[in-house]
Length: 190
Image 1: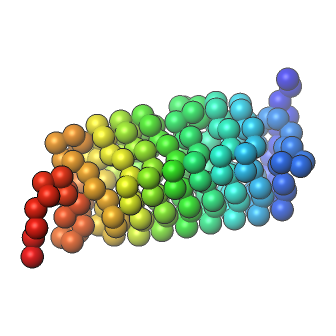
Image 2: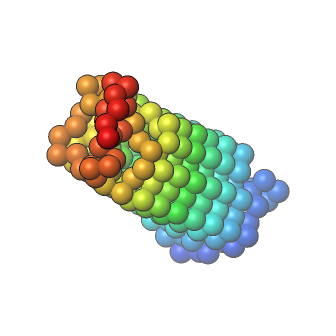
């Protein structure tokens, strides 16, 4: 299948389920209020693109390239970012719903998650070094053998992680949030 190359275009209110996006590379494009839910994005390339108010829930992201991509006010439920092309992979998220998504073994160094819901997200074996979780809800998110060196959890809530199973060096926590480090010990602090 031949790939199209689309540059510097804006797509508004596009429903991929009824009008499929042409297979190819999208560079410096803006997608606003588009529906990618359950879409097959296998092998698509998105470089320096912005997605605003889009729904990507349960989309197939196998071998999809997300390079310098910004997601703002998007719904990304159950998305497997671990299936995306590993290199180049660089994303930022602002005001996004990412519940039940997976970043297994994904390199997310210096990624910013701003005001996002990350409930039940799997970060197992991911590189989250120097990631910022600003005002994020991490209820039941999984951190296992995760690199959290320099990660900023100061304004995040509801996270629980085992310091013995994750790399923590210069990781930033608030005094209240640090309680999430002790949850495995089933102790009471007053």
